[in-house]
Amino acid sequence: MSKVYYNFIGGNWLSSSSGKTFESRNPANPSDILGKFQKSNARDVQQAVAAAQAAYKHWSKVPAPKRGEILLHAAELLKQEKQRLGRLVTREMGKQLKEGLGDIQEAIDIAEYMAGEGRRLFGYTTTSELPNKFCMTIRRPVGVAALITPWNFPIAIPAWKLMPALICGNAVVLKPSSDTPLCAIELVKILDKAGVPKGVVNLITGSGEEVGDALITDPRVHAISFTGSKAVAEHVTKIAGIKKVGIESGGKNAIIIMDDADLELAVEGVLWGAFGTTGQRCTACSRVIVHKKVQKQVETMLLKELKRLRIGDGMACDVGPLVNEKALEKVAGYVKIGQQEGATLLCGGKPLSGKGGKRGYFFDMTIFTNVTPSMRIAREEIFGPVLSIIPVSTLQEAIHVCNNTEYGLSSALYTKNVNQAFRAIENIEAGITYINSSTIGAEVHLPFGGIKGTGNGAREAGIEGIHEFSETKTAYIDYSGKLQKAQIDTENKSKK
Image (cartoon, rainbow, N blue to C red; front, side):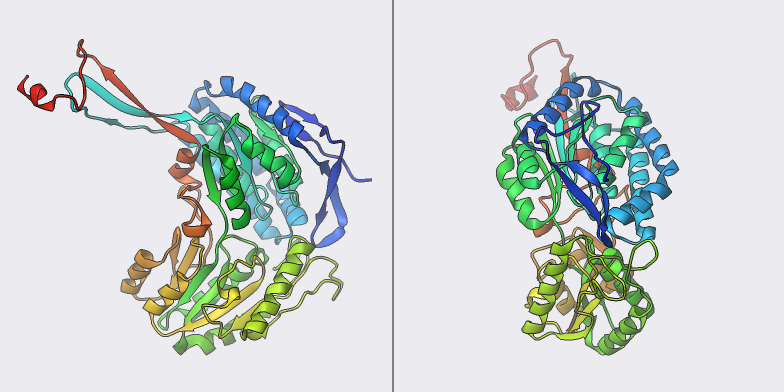
């Protein structure tokens, strides 16, 4: 019989008032049920927000260095539990074990980094236009923050949101994806064990329609941080109202390979970018924009190296399953679209579920070539192991093709020409550009996020993560002993 897990509200594990539950299953083996989870409703949301609001009053007054000590303790606990939690990520989400362990390492890194920010939370001082007057800014918490997270980094992304929110003094309500609720619960358990006061971190599981919407529209919630699809992101921004909203909504990332590139290095980067996490990363490489002079060579090398990758359970293989049946159907649909559009299928293109003992949601690694920039498979986010190869003649053309999408998250250029590298950095429309590396994400001390349809200007991690979960307050101290009016009667002031 499956274990039942509960919501975490006000420091207590509680059943949903709905009395209903849902299951989380291993995508590599859907008969493997991880547990039953609360199918929460608007009443549960109200209770969680109330708990966060009450806890915020105390937590926001705890000195930030003390808050940092708790986050540092959480980092130590994550280190102790890294192997167990890494295996849980692989079991619940499907990515290979090395990536599952990397998920936990990201959580450790962001906890350590944000713990250090407790000793900073910098504002700045500046001069005044008036004599005997002091000016400065300080950082203040926003209040109650709603964190809505996806399934593809089921511990890392919640941690990327939780740690800066907490160090800034906010209380939070976390709503994880219904595909990976257990990972989020384990992270919250660690924060509780580390000493986060009751009510500061709350967790509710359930659907986006019922739980997510109620959380976003609650007037007591002052900040929202959302990672997910562009369609849902647009819905979030539409219903949120006047709140601090951070959005990260995917990408259609490209790797440009010029004719002077180190092709072995480039191919290695393409394979990792396209098929790591089975292509289920917002930073995944789904387009290779390659110079025509080396196109055939790159394709030959890709096909050769692809044979080395094993598809199966992430505990023992290189490429795991898609997250669920809906994702499998979506990828199959895009393969059909690519064929109908006239792209050449180099390899893959078929689901593998049921073949070779594979019972999960497996799809063969797929490469299309001679793709044109106007094709849907070159413009729309597929979120699966499907790669499009687009031939070009110049760097200028490559950058134009790279920018020919509504997204703008990660990008990469392989070249030995430093002039081309800097032109790409300047002209590629993306929040991240790598030179001679794959379209991977950001290190935790640097900002992560995109432009155009990828986001609304918010950035996670680094100092930008602090900015996302805090407000700037300006303070003036006038010690002149008289009323001084800035920007009033400037001429008379100068005479005095």
